[in-house]
Length: 411
Image (cartoon, rainbow, N blue to C red):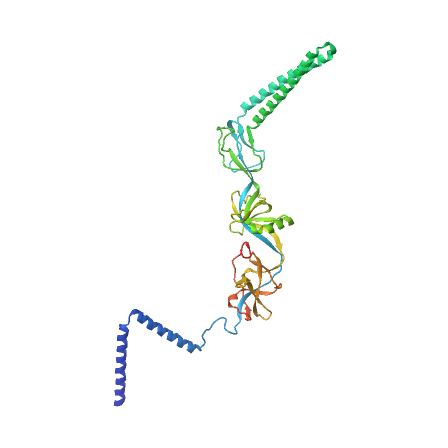
């Protein structure tokens, strides 16, 4: 027993000595040396842990023999409308700056600011009294000269009735007097018409159905025919127009669509979801803007509820044609060194790659030109885990953000 106690005491003494030297060595390490030592220790522990787990280098999804969960879609062949999207500005169909055509005092304002008016509605009245007096004076001059013309004609008739007893010179003179009086009466009639027009200008009416803007003058002001400031501006908002631009590369498609019939245009709000109005394409500008490579188009929209307003920015969608080819979800399209491709899944659930030609992206669908067949299964999510020949298992689709607008492939 004494020997055992001695051996135990010797082991304890040596352990204490080793612990002391280790503590002294650690105290002598700097911060960098301590970090290296801790890193080596942690790496050693991880290596030992992996050996304890079973010795496999990696464990997780995609291990050999494990089916890959993917979201599947189908190749469709349904008619799809093809749209071209552009940013547009709403413009009034007609705009007129109402000005006075005569000088005078405003005695009546017949509208309220922002009021809807009809063609012919009275907007402004100017004091008509000076113009009424002038018109009556011109009418009096006309009546006087018409009376003198009647007398000259009667004298000519009497001279002609005398026959050879009347001097030829006298008859010719009377004929000249009649012609002179006829010319004077015609001039008087022109003066009457002009005075009546001036009188009519004292009442200013709306030239078309529209809406008034801000009033620039008040009752009692003197206006002149040469004033630059309009009395009010009237705009026609129903129907209303939208001017928008599209890529000039799409011009052949637009022209072909116009030859086939009237093209529909839809106006959307800034969120590109709220449809404001639906109209028709009126015209394509006769030249391309070389600085931007775009072409201007104009569409007309019925606007009975005034959802479109002059100066408003909208997103315009022009429906140019109806596509009757193959399409898949745009999420199925992948890009590789050799171009676009997608993953197809056969009846046994095996995945394989297939090259495709994408002609256009339209509302979340890719319009494709390839040898795929309608109803064929394609992978729309989970492609990054796939390899040729890999087994797949269907997975529920994830909610997607709505896709708005359309673009040509490669743009």
